[in-house]
Length: 281
Ligand code: AMP
Image (cartoon, rainbow, N blue to C red; front, side):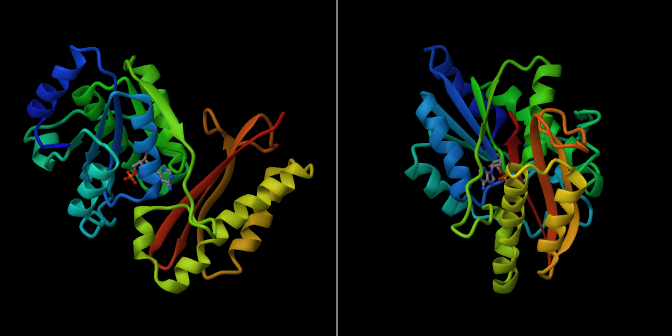
């Protein structure tokens, strides 16, 4: 496994493999790797000759009051995990390498970026779309692996890839959960014991919605209200719960087609997101 931190060096290394016709699978991360990231890495390893993982805590996707400074950084451990799971290249650029002096070009996916998480995190998805565009230009993989955990991010990146004619396939990998249902996240580390137990209510609320829909419920407001009731039994603050079209994030008053139930909820200072896709046939 090679660890590289400049654009030139990773391009040079990958070129050697590309000219030999090797396929490259790419997993972008912010580090603090857990089983969720690993699922993406395993899938990439299964489907490609070469796996590239980037570890870059992208400053431009954090708001001024967000957790950029204290975002968990566990590089040594991350590298050991990557080595163990057969990653070929880890790309760990510095902030200066990605955003050198004078940097002034941003990617903004209209319509999808200021809603849901984008409403309470202005600038977040512009930061995500910009860094993913840059990383795709640097790595030029055959396939990009993203997690369903960040559902809005996945919809935005899919749109961006189509709109900007970026020549890459995209694979969305199902959310990996703790045994009690809590979606794995690097931010789970911030939860205290009590909050961590409480937070498992999110997956129960999503399951409740699934059961209600299975039993014939179609009115989104009613379903959301039942989810709220359940979540508010815990010490939680709901940022949003929405039922939207899974392909374009437009709100659905009546549940139909491929729908995505998304939520963001705070436990203490920690804001968690989760979602489920439900296909109505
Ligand atoms: P992050 O390091 O949080 O930026 O995440 C890097 C990638 O891992 C993103 O595509 C996430 O959607 C994905 N990911 C994070 N948590 C999970 C999880 N619990 N299950 C599946 N994928 C995940």
